[in-house]
Image 1 (tube, one colour):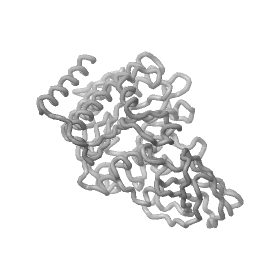
Image 2 (cartoon, helix red, strand yellow):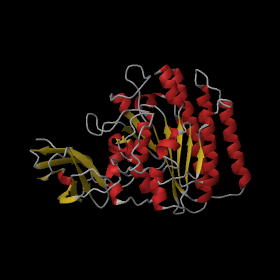
Image 3 (tube, one colour):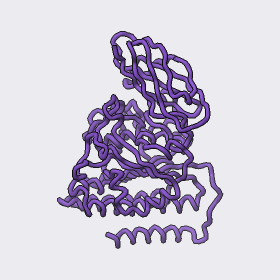
Image 4 (cartoon, helix red, strand yellow):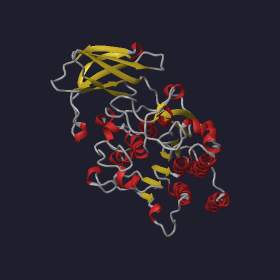
Length: 422
């Protein structure tokens, strides 16, 4: 397989050389693009143990943080640590209590929560989107290509479904066919990104998770992680070559969808620290103190992509997002609230910033958004984020179980749900 990968690198390099032997770097343009890469099933502790020179080098140039999936453990947003659940949390910037993908069967997803692809196409129809994936359902079910509920969104380019071709990729018990497919997916992604430069693209690689399920924490698993790292290096090289030749400003986000079972590393799906424990690598350095000093979340990738690409998020979507940006200033995070006697709410949050910043506080007593309708928000007051707490009177209608709270500064919005208690 090393011979195959080396051949891919050589072919890609030759293609670049033959295109323009005298090409030079062009001035930086204002064209900003993103490719996010989801490599399956690598908990943070196992990532540190694996040999990952390409992700390590990219992180050294850019940034790296431990992260988590699974929503708030024990809270309303707790989400299964299962692959499709994690993918959709990244795609929508929300936890499973909203997007309603609770397993790999992807039964009845709530498409009212827009994916990052749909948001981009709605705001900029001429922007191009692409997917390169070792699992067809990422496009057909999660993105929901061609469905009325997703506005009949259409990927401008897709390379997936190879797992259905059992003639070219005969299925074997050791799942070596998926290793081959990952290589094909990465090769196609690298070549297409270099040649065509889609504005927003998603690469999904599966082999590492398969080896985890089969062998747990083992040499076979660590070899698989290193293998995936080499494929990511191929894509990173393609992006760097394109940046150099076009002057485009690219951000690569590499992350994973879940960790592994604490006992032997074979499975996942529950709420142990290891199953929730992931990581995020960025190809660009950041000054964001939240990213530098905290364990970030997979839902933070959505607003990060928006900020890099300059996508304006409509207020009704922004009020539902469960993540915060990893590249722009974050005034407050980890917002939580409690209700007292159905009459008062007390909010608390964290901040890494030292300056005062005023936040407006809003409440909605409805959850109509999940039905595709707009919630009505009422202004409750404002507060300096440095106070880190806010208490006020509320008037929830009878029968309401949860209320939505949104805090908004000039730099961000953040929301939480508060359970109404007697």
